[in-house]
Amino acid sequence: MNEIVFLGAYFLVYAFIGWCLESVYKSVLQKKIINSGFLHGPICPIYGYGAMIMYLSLKDVTNNIFVLFFFGLIVLSVFEYIVGLFLEIVFKTKYWDYSNRKFNIQGRVCLLNSFYWGILGIIFMKGIHPFVERIVSDIPFEYLRIGVIVSIVVMLVDTVVTTIGLVKINIKLKNWNKITENIKNKVNAINAVNLGKIKNLEMKTHYKLLQNKHIADNKEKLLYELKQKQEQLQTKLERRIARLKKAFPTMNSEALTNFLNNRKKSWK
Figure 1 (cartoon, rainbow, N blue to C red):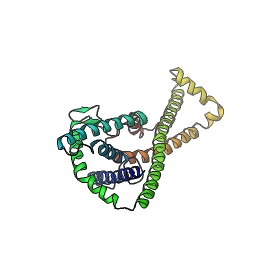
Figure 2: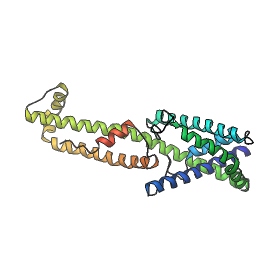
Figure 3: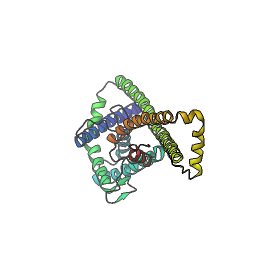
Figure 4: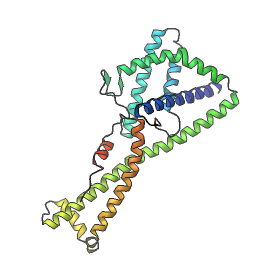
């Protein structure tokens, strides 16, 4: 039990340090305050998981720097690849992309980053972790246990809320696309009727829907309401996407790209 509490404490410390370093780095690059990572709170779990994997897999090879470098390079590169693949499968989005770097594997890992992972393995096991271990061991165990439990519960709640938000982005994108297509089809049908050029079955179908007297008399109101819904969804999507793009500048998603390319179009 004690060992689990200490591992939990290490995880939280490294997740917080990772968030600090990445947020500062991206804030300096973009010249504005950036909350890096998925979650709303000051924590990047991927760094905590990476640190724990590094600690558990390298703690028995710390006496040999070359072995430490090689294991760090391999273990963390595999971890980075698996996390990238998982995020792409679950959220249909590529949150980092090394495709423009030499010797990369499907843009998820690259040789340069893997080299850095190896160096980090040495620095981590020889300098960082011994220091963190001393700091954590000085905290009274009961306080440490309560702090770890509360922090992990908060992180899990944050993770659930954030995941639901990411899923909602995909749902809102689909709804926005449907509304946009609906507006386009109805406008095309109205314009075609005005010009006497109903050309295809799809246009005829939309025209028949508009032939209802109530709809025909209120077609401008109908289009206005559709456009209002489109704009409301667009505003919500832009806020969520802006947050993600700040945290992950190289993020790539076909659905997001289509939305960003098409959001300024208006159907008249």
